[in-house]
Picture 1 (cartoon, helix red, strand yellow):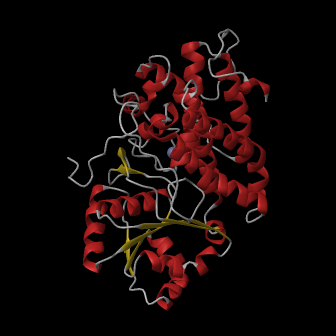
Picture 2 (cartoon, protein in one colour; picture 1 turned 30 degrees about the vertical axis):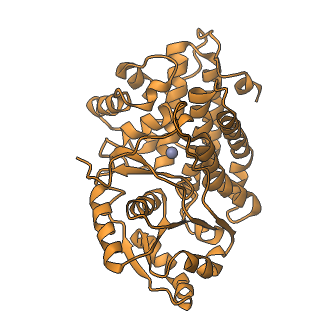
Picture 3 (cartoon, helix red, strand yellow; picture 1 turned 90 degrees about the vertical axis):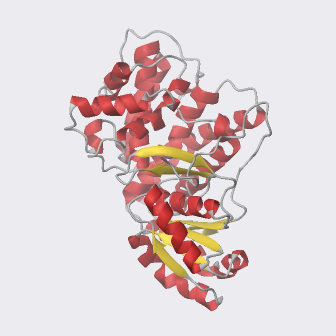
Length: 392
Ligand SMILES: [Zn+2]
């Protein structure tokens, strides 16, 4: 049972209640070497920071700590452990209380940042996020995902606000393995494929804006990703990092809970329950987009989804995103494991049911093993999503 600190809070963004917006961090400092000049800004938020990160990231950040010492800050560090899981959260809340921390600084990838944001929220402290890769927009958003110790997705928690400060230091991001940015591109393009299904017909000003920005984000990534990955640190590479870390966050912020994830993230959530998975979030989500399109194709006979899938397969080949289960290291899973993943992904409360048609686990399993299938020429019905998919 989740303890009192970890109960997911209900969204307040329903049409007939008060409307809460958590659009963006209060401040974003961005640039190569940004971390070397942030001491003063951090000192304004608190004098006893607790830095939370993984072991690798805590050692990367070490040289920058001097700066905080120059500001006379009493700094302590703690490793976030196995995952953003309830045991780690318990331990870190205690560590923060023991240190009498008055500000939390999260350093690392999505899981470290989700942990730091959630600990800060639970203790009513301000939080600074310092992403060390371009793999997610977790540094931006007012949301934390909670996993089991083994990394199985359990639930997400809506936070009361976005971080107080986000420091995006390109030099730090450049130290991350290349596949993390590739994964970030997969997670970011999912915004379009999911938001256009869940919210494409919305009449609401902010939702329309979020969906359109998701399309802009996708187009920027289609155009710039291949060149960016060939030239790490370059201007175009920085633009792609801005897209995955910042713009993807903007869309989540403006769209909020109404602009929800659909099947791509549901498939991700199901896959995290197969123990053998060793791929990261955005890689599974990218594969999940192909599964979602395949479902639209198979169940609805949607030809635009088929064309979009072919377009994505080409893009994935270009930049190295996974196209099928074996690309995720899951080539040898059993039928039983596939069924488990499909059943979890299509549980009654899953976002997969935001698709405009019913999905049975058997249909999902069929889609999961046929993401690279050639176009079915008998498909003839037209998508309700819009014509832009085939015009590109
Ligand atoms: Zn995601």
